[in-house]
Image 1 (cartoon, rainbow, N blue to C red):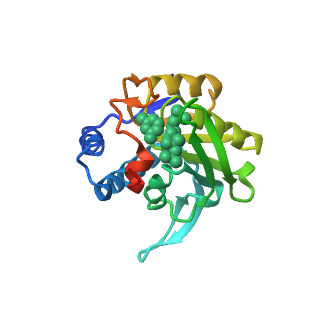
Image 2: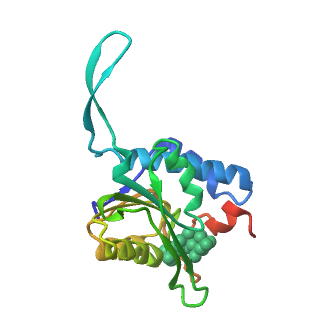
Image 3: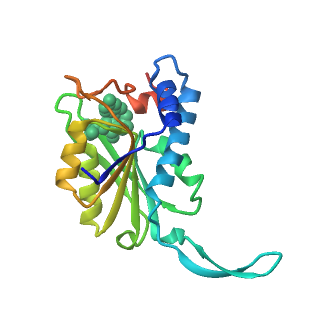
Length: 209
Ligand code: PRP
Ligand code: URA
């Protein structure tokens, strides 16, 4: 699975240990999701193409390179993906943003799509898809499929915690999509929650439970 990039860094493990704890407050949970998302985005942009540009420093002209943010779109999967948006916008603040609404049916665990709105010209943008949790992979698979149906050719998926089951499903169905994850956890439980995981990401970000 060399399309899966797991961030292995002591600071990530440190931050994840606070994020996962059931004693962590909503405020701190949100801040950590944002911080880890920024780091995931840095990693995901390491192959970004830059355009040549001439600028003038206070000393002299120089040839350098810039990223054209118009070539990208950030798309959080609602709700929990919204928690990652501030983090990625903090480093690429002018990238256009789309939204895909998905929730898991509590009995079948199948994703249900309830909203889809993406920036104009999406077929010409690289999409950075955001969702903190990749569990069965159903939501990610459906979101990626919807984007491909709209003509999107390059997609990267950023998630904080992933399960081997979901990674297997998404990599098999979408071998062209790179997945950047802060940690690959052990397995899914009988309710399809990631173990050890962090619980319900949406509820913890929005304080709904
Ligand atoms: C969570 C999470 C993912 C999905 C992952 O969303 O944010 O979208 O579950 O599970 P899967 O890989 O098995 O599809 P949830 O359905 O809880 O909705 P929410 O973000 O609105 O809370
Ligand atoms: N969605 C979550 O928010 N957490 C999980 O562990 C699985 C799906």
